[in-house]
Image 1 (cartoon, helix red, strand yellow):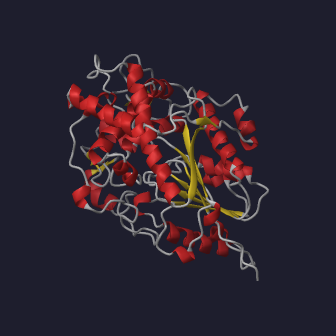
Image 2 (cartoon, rainbow, N blue to C red):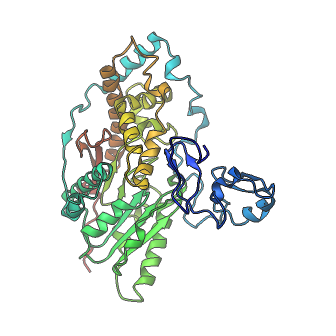
Length: 447
């Protein structure tokens, strides 16, 4: 992968000479003066026989072997003191080890009879479910300028259409307004919160809590300079996030921001906006009911069902009620990827385009999770057609999502699934919305 190989051209002057095979381009990092390669790819050139080794805390980057101990003290991947809102496994779900399934064989290893039995169980459990979801493809004026900007490429335009429809659905549910705290799980760069902030630019008393477990580049948090909106970003896995404590921290931050003004902290009237949720547990806050008020609304753009886990899944009781258990769930969540078989081609094209790097990074988490074992494109030929696989994959997604709907309904929420964007924009085009039933909303107190 040296720079001198034919057919690759030359690196940009002043940039690293390492050719990144996966991205089909040279590294864009700036090397030190007199060097051809950046620090990450310094092992490509000799430097007084100094050796670079993978960092033991994070093998994604390297360090000089003779400077390892010094690096470990300042490495960004070192273990840091846990914040007050970190509570180990507070949202981990199932604690009963006896109910956790043993490791199952891959779908490709199932016999034809075993696969057919799974499909029979799937279709039987799906009887009575609403198979044809309603379309609620909306938009919002806050994104109109960006949607009409010709500088945006195809991938950026698709993201904007999705965000515009999410905002449109939030507005239809009366979730956009003053005195709100918006919590965005799986926030990434924070673009959805950014557009909510734009939509509420003339509204006072608004707070944002962005939750993301990974270190994120190209964050848009710095664009939020309005004094009357507060942004806090938490780098923590939802599995260990105590939302009550996090909101309490936000209240303290907001109170300090008000400089002693007599204002009511907005988190007392909080709503939750979830874009990508590893474990859907925001409605389950049974600890101190007297101290808690209902979440005003939940919005989840559903995706990545094949990453679901039985121990975290909130619809276990629903599965048991239709005669299913952890083994069936394991296979259904793997088979759910069949619904988006065409996504691999789309993401491959997007990753080779000349659009901005951060747009490509948004796709990588989805792209890397698909495999031939999951899609069964090779092993299932002669058993199921492509269309049959897609239909079964959609049924698996619907069944998993219905368990979430029932979970919310049992906790007093009116929950609905709908298509929020065209399938041509994204094959992951289902939106789950939930608002509290009237019985959950406390009556105003008159003094």
